[in-house]
Structures are given as structure tokens and as C-alpha cells.
Amino acid sequence: MALIPCPYCKKQISSLAKQCQHCDAKLTGDNEARLNIAKINQASKLQTHSFIAMTLFVAGVVIWFWGGEPAEGTRMYAGAVCFTFGFIGYLITRVRIILHKRRSV
Image (tube, rainbow, N blue to C red; front, side, top):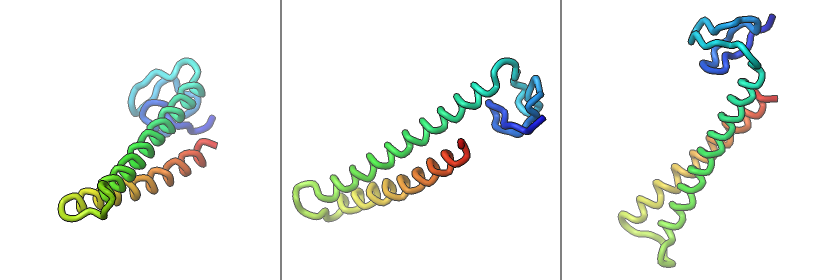
């Protein structure tokens, strides 16, 4: 008997349990397949977050340098905000992807 995460609520349960005591989900069938599907869904979600952050970063650069000159006024602030949030969001998401891969191995 080992402790495994519930495929639905992610709380620790016994590997022999027929039902999760936390969320009352039925655990009949192939629990290993459900765990693999949950890991794949999480990896997909993280990749989507990474893509959104990179798009925001690129949008900030485009806004900043649109027209061939560095931005001024409102355009400068909008570009800087997009650039900053995109860059920081991308870094955070990449760290989360690495940690997810380490936990999945």
C-alpha cells in the first residue's frame, strides 16, 4: 500500500482505496491512466501559459518600437507593461514547467 495523489482533487489517498475520502470520486478502473492524463493536462496548461506570456512579451516589444522610433507617452507605458509582464510571466512559467517535469519523472 502506498500513498498516491487522487486523480481528481490531488490529495493523498491509499493506492488500495476504492473511493477518495476527500472528493468522493470513484477510483475503480485504471488509476495509473488517470494520473498520466492529469499530468498531460497540467503540462498542456503550462505550455499554454508559456505561449501567452511570450505573446505578451512580443506585443510589448512591437508596441514599444512601432513606427521605427522608441515609444513616448501612453504607448511607452503600454509597451513597458506588456514587455515586463510577458517577460516575468514567461520566466515563472518556465520554472513551473521544469518543476512539473521533475515531479513527473
